[in-house]
Image 1 (cartoon, helix red, strand yellow):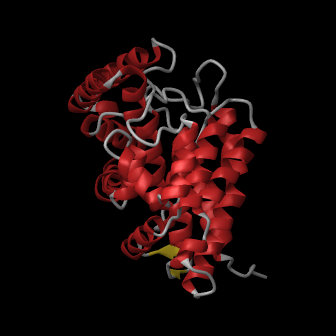
Image 2 (image 1 turned 90 degrees about the horizontal axis):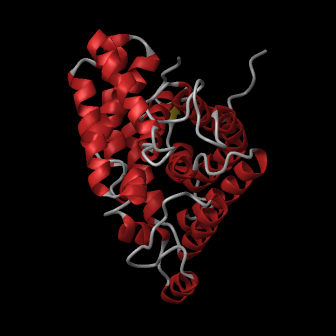
Length: 316
């Protein structure tokens, strides 16, 4: 007897699978199944994906409730879900900050999927994107405070001083509460120097309009998911300097990394012997300075593109 379809459970599985697929691909300069960083390896990411899944389910359930008019969009508690998810991830593994950027991107995605009609678990991505806009724009100051708490739990590396509402400045939270600054508004301030925030306030522009179509195209061309993920990763990195690298070592170095990614792609990437050699050299270059040149934000965008693919019906 077939089990009754549980939409929130289904969304949660889609997003958990996207995280597992992303970490399984041997992208240059990232943690993968073969190589990690000091104190962080792929097992920490697997544990993080499992820890995150119930929170994606909760987010989707809130989306379903909002679509039915049972709760308002401002009552969803996106920030609290992000914070509780990060706390759980922290409790389930000892590898430090594994998924902060991904969780910030995935939580509104899960809510939006819960709000979106599906055909046997396959979602219309253009409708999902419209719902995503509504979700992030309805966030509250309480959501902002909760995300600041999530960042405090995750302790991501390279958090320099922000020009306004610095997460490390205790007075920031006081201002957010007193001036009623929503999470969307906070991310608007940070969008110029942080790609995750930029995605939030620009309706996931890079994810929907570049990374996801590129992933679909690469899958058609190669038929191999690992190759498609790596080529999409290189294409996104070539076009958009990684803000995680920029935060740690400056925008100039981030641009240099992007230029090398473009050269690897132009030489054929995994499709040619020269490209494979250049990719190997690029990976070695990125790992030479510990994780300073780890394109972590690009990895988050790839995870989001994979989430769209899986929500849209792709199965590995």
